[in-house]
Image (cartoon, rainbow, N blue to C red; front, top):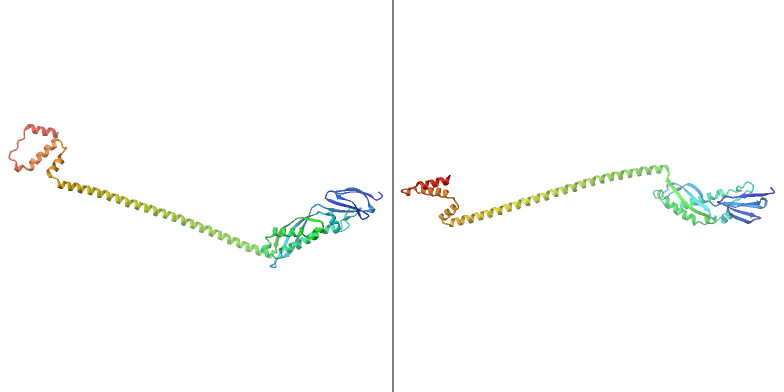
Length: 302
């Protein structure tokens, strides 16, 4: 009624209220009554915004690349933004009267394109497709230092690149080449495992052979030692026997006979005596054997 209206703005919306070209009120999430014929409202969203992007680029070796990612930003200085872009809203419909709010993301994405191009312009295809994080970090740093971004009152929160992909034909060629390399590596791994197994078998066999040689050498040593011991023992026995024979040769035969008969019982001595008599029978004239002597000999034999 009479042009007086009420406006309420949510958090995340920074509002400027102008009257006769001057700011009479500003802030985030304001609510107020205003006189529509003399009031202008400017509403700037200050919450974070995600701006996805995808564009093509060419590597230094003239290969087509498709770069896909996302820029996240927020308006951190609305007073700078309002000077650069028109965020004025219609008092009746409370909608923007220009396309500038939509174009902010487009401007920033164009700057992303420029910075990413600068980051990959000296890269070859193989280098670029695995350098997503490095390219994103370089582009993000470049954007934060960009004067246009600063003049727009924008804060770059993050820049991520999901993928840097080659063209379809190039991708198939790379897949075939990579597959071939993987097969070669697999064959090489199998070959190395087989060589390792053969080498281990050789080491084991060599160890067994060395053990057999050591055992044979030890056995031979033991046999030689046993032979030496037996020879030494035989030499000792032969020496002892020679000495005994030598002594016996030097002794009187009668003494030897007496020593041999020492320790015999009376019966055996009598038997030996009779044997001696028999050996010299031709020299004996008469031999008298008394019954007592014969009885004694018979008893001893019994």
